Image (cartoon, rainbow, N blue to C red; front, top):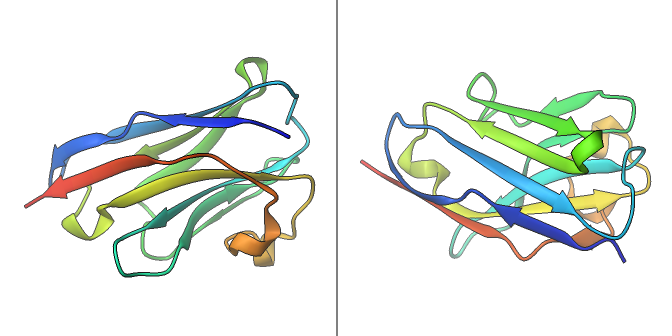
Length: 125
């Protein structure tokens, strides 16, 4: 198992910023594919951003230009920098990890084996 613990969620007004963190414990995930997903009430879980072990990234069209994914291998931590937040970004955000992924599929949940418990992001208008 690769325990993943998300943090950094909260409530913010539209136009604001947040940075989510995902700390991995018990295992080095430097070569893993890592991703951020979100799920709003009554909606399916959707991929937001992903990064493979080589540093290639995939960003959902809905957040492109506003969100950035990055990773600090020394800290075993994945980040999601979110800017220009909109009420539509309100959701539970999850971190996920998998030993491999194909960038063309990296925003699909089935690519990932391990999931965190999530952190809530609420954006008010």
